[in-house]
Length: 311
Length: 77
Image (cartoon, rainbow over all chains, first blue to last red; front, side, top):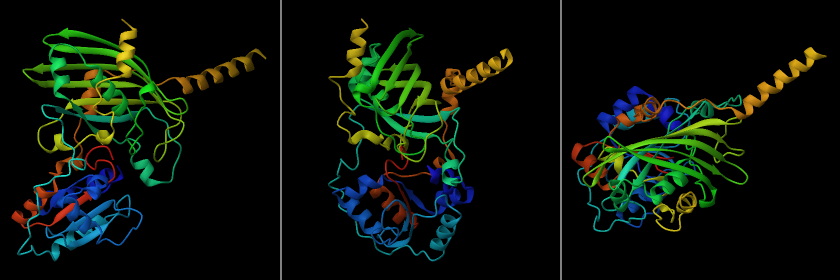
């Protein structure tokens, strides 16, 4: 988050990236573990960086043959170091005459998850509104307090088929609640457990060929977080595809201890919005929690229990 | 006495309001458009596939710039 607010908010840095570099942004954790040639190449590059020893997060400038030119993680927030390194790397760069091909016959799908066949992707945007904060001298804290959290939501083919019939499937609702109604504005948050879904009210109304969704939710842990929010949405399916998936969930969010960094004082307003992802790279970024066994779970759902109890 | 009681009640009311009140819900359409905005870092054509990135670097004669974070660098990180 600090990178987005500092180094990648600088116009000249962005112009260098757009015109002089090929910009690649993988998930570090997954690619480091990948059992394929992409993982081998990536490990070869990052292992050439000596510092810091505790993490491989950060930035690397390399030749496509895997030779590291620059590698760094600090300072955070950036103080101009990135732009300087980018210019220094370009000044001496010579494209290699020969680059050996990598074996692309095997792709480690655990490290490179893709949306299930026939599925679609929505973008998820999160922001804390009306939060009160402790005074701080840490620039990286103050810089990201108003940050926009981002994630992706996968919607499966069978869920799209249910939406086309005018129903909002329990599996989709449970995924949205457990994995996406989180404050991810300052780092990676914990997901909600199934039992944390304490209450859910959902009303679906056909409206001009679309579905209007209104409702409310209460998510609550026994000792830490609580989110009580209003749900509003409009979605539309044309043929076999979703053409509109607009949701806003907003309400009172409290936490007693932070997952990362810091938490606001008392209750804040957390807003989560969903919108269909554009085709191309935005839709290729996987949701954070695809590795979790419950992410695509379609049975034994808490949402089913709650909806049936209200019939 | 009555005056100090009123001051105390007013203060208590303010404290209670600070602890329990959050802002009223915003309008759906305006909040949706306010939140669903691309940011400056997204003006770069970030790639997510290493093989495609490497091939582009060879074809275009450019170095690779890798931004690698825990979580999903272009998503939740």
